[in-house]
Length: 323
Image 1 (cartoon, rainbow, N blue to C red):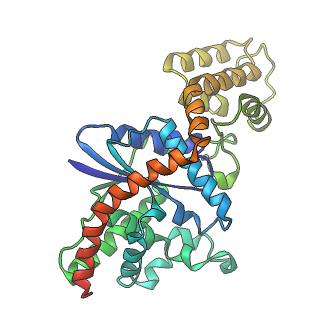
Image 2 (spheres, one colour; image 1 turned 90 degrees about the vertical axis):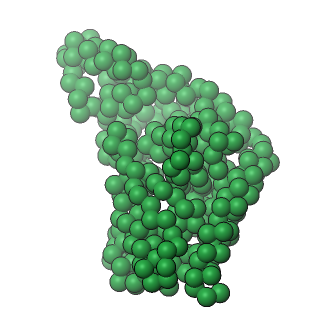
Image 3 (spheres, rainbow, N blue to C red; image 1 turned 135 degrees about the horizontal axis):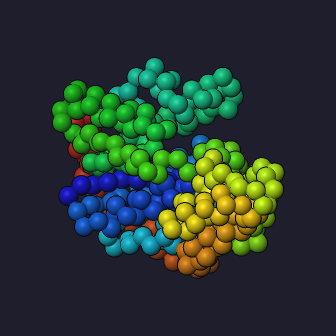
């Protein structure tokens, strides 16, 4: 049985890219009989960006509600809030003491802001070691990652190997699991969907808000209605491919190439696919968000199970260190 670990930061309600690129694939893996999954909300990582308590709390609830709305079975997976397992911060300190400062200066999370150090807090600088603790604390075998996280996972492997070499075998050295088919979810501007770029689609928005967002922010060319249009390279069709059936996506492409079907029609079909295709998930998300106590109960159960695994691993480390 493989143990798989995935974390999602709580920087807001998960957008379409998060849902299709990380959450849905992680749930599919978690529900396979030969896998054991640890799935967590990385609210401590989010603290490097968000300094408002109510904002961070609400974001965390929104991420939890999204996982559950998409059908996560918490009986088959360990689903928890990172900050509910205090052992992770203790392990992060130990790992920091075994990892070179110079290597941390090469981390993308730091280097991307190193030219404006006033924006860098020490939490952001040591981010890779907290991520390493998230993984090593649970003896994870595999970590699903995108290309932008491969470097941090390599740092996790590095610090685990350094510790094992110096102190004796202690940590499971995890392997990456890259899902090729969901690496890039385009935003409304055609670039990778990202909150930092402001190009996301929130499928939990009300239909009218979604309609306004799509019509305003997805830019199309001025090809006349009656003329043929090329779907390849079109953001509308790229997004439609991701949320509609293959048959419906092919039908849209044919209508675009035939002419008499405009970009406005395509946007409406995209909107319908988003509204109708995620209607149940939207309803479930709102139901979970309306009962925070129910969310807290789910997360508390998960944290208890997570600590059952974390505590023996941390004790191994403490014993090797000499505490």
